[in-house]
Length: 295
Image (tube, rainbow, N blue to C red; front, side):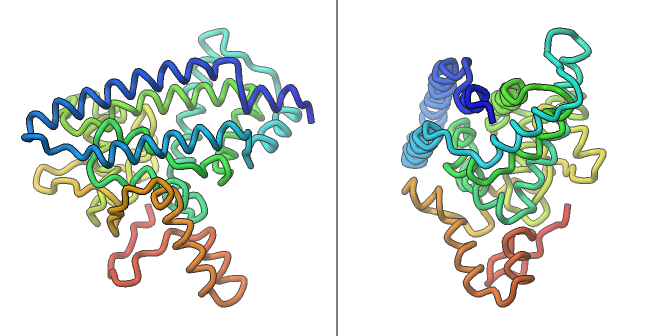
């Protein structure tokens, strides 16, 4: 494998710009906290904000190690690509955007419906209050889980892994504002775009709202594949995990679902049960009668 190519994926040229973007979104999250705290008489969970900063710092430290299960796979796929495509014309840009949205939808859906991937993604759903800061809590083990292999079709078509990674980064940047619960519904745009209203439902742990609205910029694939759920005026979202996580310790936040997965694996009997534990849907809490939607 080409070592320079591997370095390009792990540490692309545009990486320094991520620091600038991170500072901007942190400033926006702090501003939101100050405004909300003032409106609520000082009631804003700054300890959760600090825990999210710990999550960001830990993720940056782990990313600096360049460890990724998906990167070698994506580079191998790129070596066997059908063509070479660059985002230098409107047709290729449109293909990249729609293809990335399609792959992101299935990546996000798998992150909820495959236990191995959920162990990393659960961190993002751990805040018990939806805020702009919650958008930054993404966990430490995402690259180690390998879910990014779901973007391999775009690389096989001909887009370089760095280009695909940049498209996904822009997708995630778009989603930052979706975590502002104070933004109202946006009229006709709700039919096409992923909006704060749709994302409030996605972050809710109400049984009626579980496992839905997986889109990035667009909501159309949720509508096409039956995973769309509209926000209801009579059912306010209850944020956080089905079993709320109340810890502010970044290590507990990052590893709590991995610890639960390890415990379930230890109790599983036989390879079939172990594989189901690893790659089946996340199990409901033992004391709960809630059945998770297969959406």
